[in-house]
Length: 225
Ligand SMILES: [Zn+2]
Image 1 (cartoon, protein in one colour):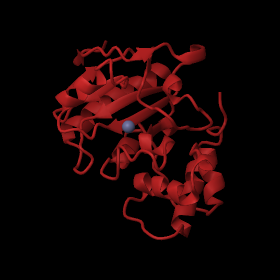
Image 2: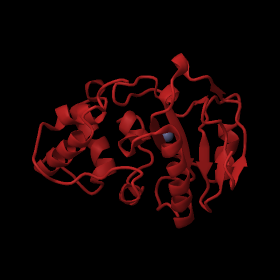
Image 3: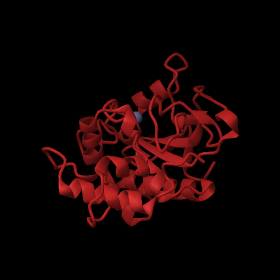
Image 4: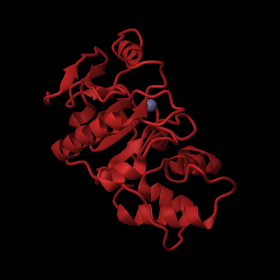
């Protein structure tokens, strides 16, 4: 365990299936009143949910599950053709109710933690996703208040540029979205929640150019390793 990380072991984990190693990092918010309440829930054997880490608003990092083990944070959903996201990912919970900004100490602790995780497991920045990306329509965390651009500036995620338009849904599948599992509108909503939180109305040219850029950066993303 790295320095500055508090141990708060959860019993809710198991081995990664098929000897998988993590190549996806999934970010969540807790949607609970306090970090302590969230830690209690994530360590309650009866509830059977967990994550590898939780970062409180003050920036303290709690480790609940060893990175080598399979934590139970992703549930049903899919990314880039991966159905068992828990076996292939590391999960970080951010102490946030979902309706307010994320604090500076929390963001900076997340950056430090994510940097270590990406380098230890050789995870590409393109594979740092939100729970809402892999479970469109079912999950909305880490939500429209989360600063994805800041993570991208630090090389810890990606942010698309407008360019040539493509086929929005075909490109979404290449990027990793579970396109055939959800309604087109639901998928558009999930995309905008992360990349265009202020956008409204039907699919437009900006959506298409941004998705084309995401797909172009990661052509191998639709392939299961
Ligand atoms: Zn979540």
